[in-house]
Image 1 (cartoon, rainbow, N blue to C red):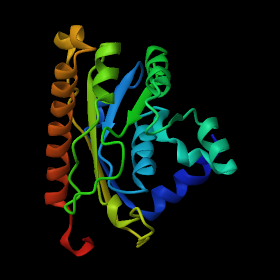
Image 2: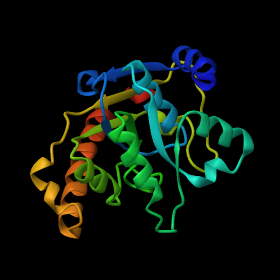
Image 3: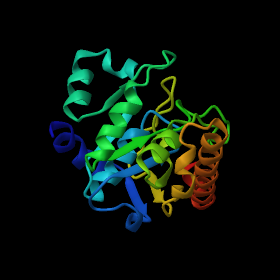
Length: 216
């Protein structure tokens, strides 16, 4: 993949990476990853971790990213799934289900957008992650990142300081198999979603507390 060949060496050399909990990302078979979202840089960070784990990531990405001909070619070539926000279309989730059933690694940002919290902790999430987990009867692996928000925030603020620490941590898979019969029940979907976000928030808090003060 051209993007990996070009970007991976630059990412590896420019930032000070730390990957934790890699044992929670299976080397093969379907895996559903729920990520926190603080920065435009997050997809690169999460994708890099997945590549290090030996997986090819497939993101549910906002359709606006596909507007550019260049980005559209890159994203489609990498198998990314466009999400048309505000339309209520079920196609993105159906595409994600097909990918999972084919044994792929699917990543999504349950919040649906970059967090608006000033402390960068996750916001309330939509129930897409629960719908996928219950429909495919798969556990959810939460993966948190910290440090990316200082690289490139939404709105254009950027800081490409060489050697900036960026840490990612995968948590233990969350098994919701006992709730699979509630795949269409709003209460069950909310319960699963909230549990995912609780674990994701816990992971983010842990990374935040260990981040070197001189880089903040």
